[in-house]
Image 1: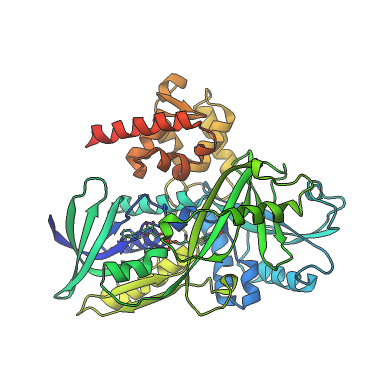
Image 2: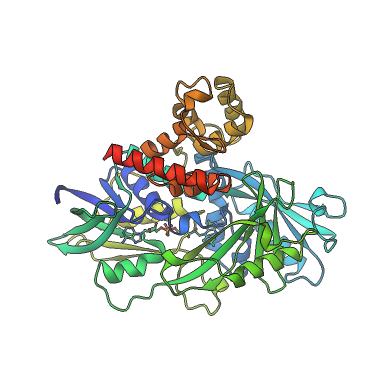
Length: 505
Ligand SMILES: Cc1cc2nc3c(=O)[nH]c(=O)nc-3n(C[C@H](O)[C@H](O)[C@H](O)COP(=O)(O)OP(=O)(O)OC[C@H]3O[C@@H](n4cnc5c(N)ncnc54)[C@H](O)[C@@H]3O)c2cc1C
């Protein structure tokens, strides 16, 4: 099937970078289409450590541009989406003879406090670990620690909110749509896509193509664009384990392992601790990435060096793994490859331009999108100006520090909901939670119960507003209720969703 309209921009990839670029572009007045071959954020963008951070470690590799940009983004992103992004304090214990001298850490944190446009985030502090509650769950290895600020993000939701906002502004956003080929034809692109559910093929035309396929960026160049011998990105696997809660403090830990690597232990989804990550080169299909036994052993062993209560394999309730699509700068070690992004344009208006996106972090996606829009403007003509700083993502239109007020407001309106349920809904949907709950005045009004605090009203919302089609989309990306539902409950949800999809077809 061929479409008549010629889009200004066609984006391949519904991870954070593709969705961020699509949103920025449509907001400036370009006509935009985006195709994601699976679910939004099903690639790297749901497998991160979930930090909106400057990246203290990158200072060691002199990545000052990246760190400054990332630090500046912390409060910009928090203000855009205070439901899915919030500040977090990190405790960085240290001792004499550790992998990095205290002066180096102090210098890094000085930069953190002073070059990062910090207005609301509290500054760095020094802790006496013999007295501070942060010392309690740890072995008595450390007498001192630094405590500093960074941000936490619900990565998968950040992606889908960008997709939703882009669609609200008029972009054509297509999930489960794989780009098969893209050919230049008289100054425009003809892009062939396949609906991965129905197998239906369609041709779409566009003036400019953006390849934001993350770890698949080279694969797209090879398979869809017919290029030979492409080696732009280095794939580096990173895995995490989620274990039963190892500490009660709301602060996260930043540990420096003796091998020089760093590791986070972060309070996660109320009842759990998230531990990661690893860093190793990866050469297989990114879709097949899984944590290895060696990584599990490494993470358990390393964490057990710090916590009084050891981290055992039996404590693990979930693991996830993803690959970083890092621009290949020829670094010898995976940990040393640049975390900065690189945007390359091939072709011009006459020949139909292509923009390839290499690398990029969740933290810098908005700035990456702005840089991409500069390139798009140069290639096919400038439309609107920058606009995303100061904007709100769907549900994020409340003050950065207003989460507790939103929770109180929602609970007043829906007093029959449990307090934890209200908190979860505001964290995920912000001001849109009332629209999701609608006229419900008691539990029965929320429809079928699927387990934990998941009801039909939420599932229907996710199908209608957020492109969810499978239980996995709901349980592991739109929410993390996969940690709470039993396998039987998850199977019943999948059956329900299949029925809902068939009814809609
Ligand atoms: C272990 C780990 C920890 C990390 N921690 C952090 C962190 O704490 N903070 C931070 O800021 N960053 C972090 N990052 C980096 C960040 O997660 C990534 O840089 C970012 O998510 C990359 O997004 P992307 O959109 O480029 O790629 P992806 O999210 O992978 O998106 C690319 C999409 O393209 C789609 N696609 C591919 N081929 C096609 C095709 N032919 N047709 C249609 N669609 C296609 C894929 O399905 C995929 O969804 C981490 C990364 C890893 C791996």
